[in-house]
Image 1 (cartoon, rainbow over the protein chains, first blue to last red):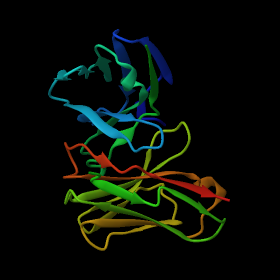
Image 2 (cartoon, rainbow over the protein chains, first blue to last red; image 1 turned 45 degrees about the horizontal axis):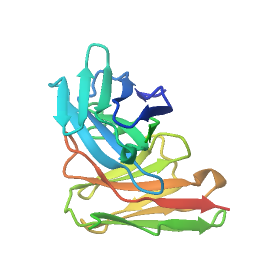
Image 3 (cartoon, rainbow over the protein chains, first blue to last red; image 1 turned 45 degrees about the vertical axis):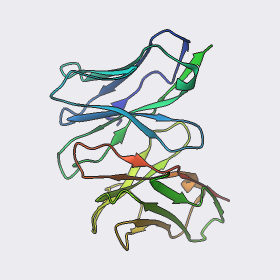
Length: 115
Length: 113
């Protein structure tokens, strides 16, 4: 039973446009959410995070939005660049039942940004 | 400079032959994690160390063991690899358990033949 879901396996966007990657979660005890970017044959690289006390966090071209009532978060990339083409993983963690700090990952969304 | 280093990058081992994967970190982080990622799936946590305290996930097979001899190094031992253990193995570190991002190594691609 997946606790973190990324329902779109892939997304294709034109360079310069906005990329929106979505993530849903089921565990209400999650209180910290992260996005990772992964290139082929490399480990995931941390991109941006958000605590459950916030609903938005911005870092340059990357913005993460959190909707706690809907148990939904999204990553916006504006403007998208070809170098953003990678697999994006959503991850969540929380302090509950001995699982403090354990990152639970979604399956990832493969973003392709076309020139 | 790489902060979390995994060796080897690629490993081929025979069915049933013990194999050890290594991970080192220069970040002096308290927490070290091992994840298994199979093709097109989410990385799955196997276990983690908080300093010297070992925490095993409930569904991690007994075949998988880990050692952390000091802050910098952590090893993943697979005692009797099966074909189903073919996967990417990711090591990660974190300053603490809650509220901090994890830093990942480049991974070891393990193939069991």
